[in-house]
Image (cartoon, rainbow, N blue to C red; front, side):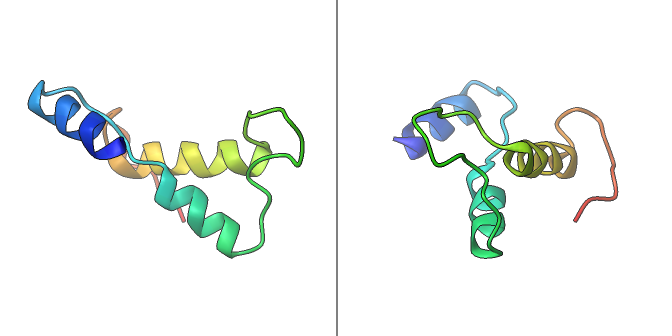
Length: 67
């Protein structure tokens, strides 16, 4: 599904950021990026991973030093 969405966004020239790799990396480092509950919202660590991915991407005109 993500491939279809990415292809559509790219085809329309719509800026987007793939945050799954950043979340996966944090998970592999042992961080809980989502709570162990039915709440599907990211934890503080998850929000940080997403924010870092967006900053690193440059889509917002940012050039932040991120990990």
